[in-house]
Amino acid sequence: MIQTKKSNWSSINTIEDLQREQRLLKARIRLQEKELRQRVKQVPGELFYAGVNSVVPAMLSGKITATALNFGKNLINKAFVKKEDGEETNSKLFSAAKQMGLLALLKVGFNAFMNKK
Image (tube, rainbow, N blue to C red; front, side, top):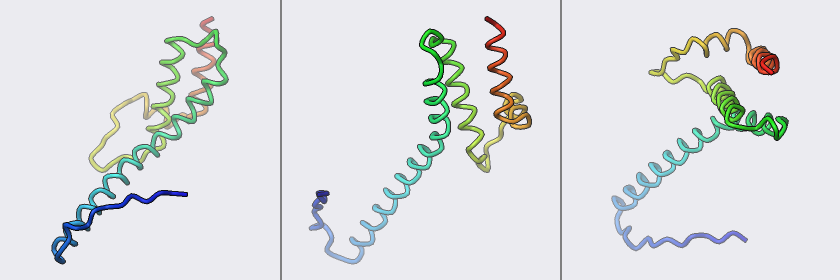
């Protein structure tokens, strides 16, 4: 059973008080929606990180592997997020990755990693 939070509404006596509370509530809801949108944008990268991290053997886990996984997570997050109006992407690596395709880039990176051994 979900318990509801009881609020004290004794400060609302007039229509103006009610409208003020409505504006405050709408502002809180907008802020929570914005935070939720930011968290949802991170889901694809987190899925990638969790999936690859479970496949990588324990003997390969280390600082370099963690850095590579974080780079991949950030790259995937940027690929799935729409560009904001004032935001520009100046990264040549990121634009090349978009043209090349994400899976092809991962394949090239994996082959380069395996050939260094």
